[in-house]
Image (tube, rainbow, N blue to C red; front, side, top):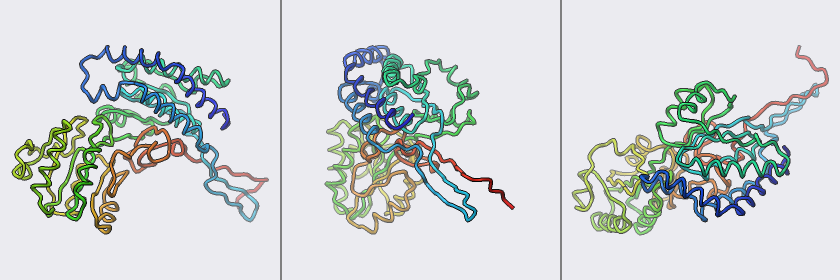
Length: 395
């Protein structure tokens, strides 16, 4: 496919989403009714309303407007013997996306891989089966309408056992697997396939409030970080510098505002002794947990190095925030914290492909290879060497 064909497919799909709003919401409601016992986090991820459809349409338009990631020259060298050597971007090939409960992945993640010239195999969770099949059908209408083979985007309507077999045997000749879901899914894929894997890792994001900081700002950032509990860029842990002036009053102010928003506040025995409405949790294992729930954990730290050490030991490597008026401390924290995205005085909720200007994302990678953070179309390519000669030989 050339760039124009790709963009026409994406824009055609955006139009089909608009035309099928009612049908999409109706089918999605049927999926919701099939699993009535879902918790609030699962419901938030599964539900497709007008706002989510608007987001899908916007993502398709953004990806269509971006430069084509394919064929970009990364390096070019002409030797003395006129041998021309070019390194340029090429698609991975076939990408398998395995995901749970988020039908918008069917549109947005597939769009990024498609723009980069990859074929896409989609395997969603059973809880969103009907919605995913409908959305994939719209993909295939858009492809067919632009005279593009419909096998560029396919939905794998497989059982759990069939999916596990696919992962182990690679019967579809997959070149890259991207698992988006819980740690159990990610671990199974990593342990049972020889295919390269990009991990869209867990959140469990930390926010550190330095002793020299605007505490009102810190409270706003914490509250915004818990505005949606089902997303991987939510804040789960808040570290407070022990040297904060009026620590008890500020702590009470933070806990009160969180409680008003329906957020349960937990902490260790030390911090709970300063505010009796904090529930005590002394099990250090909670520091490793991504809550995906209206819950937040507070603890005290001795200073910036203590905060850095805690983030690097316990977080998911996704996002970390420092709230401080000290530029030197901000730089130290941002350089030393081992996360894909680090923030100074801003909400963790911006860790998102659309917010970062890369459009729709296929994943937020917490690995160091091959890219970290939101992966858009520009990151879903690999490279290849093209060598052009006229009979040259190496002596």
